[in-house]
Length: 64
Image (cartoon, rainbow, N blue to C red; front, side, top):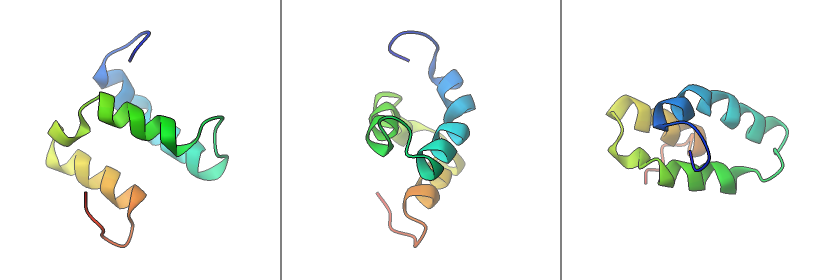
């Protein structure tokens, strides 16, 4: 989003980014993805999208 694309592109690729960060650690890991979520103002997304993010990072139900 800082060099190309819009939030919608980020949303499209987000499942794969989360998958890679969970399984391979990516080059920068969770910190980069979390930073991009903040940059994309994910807390203003639809409730179902926010719930998906929360359930990935906090599967036990911890909320933000």
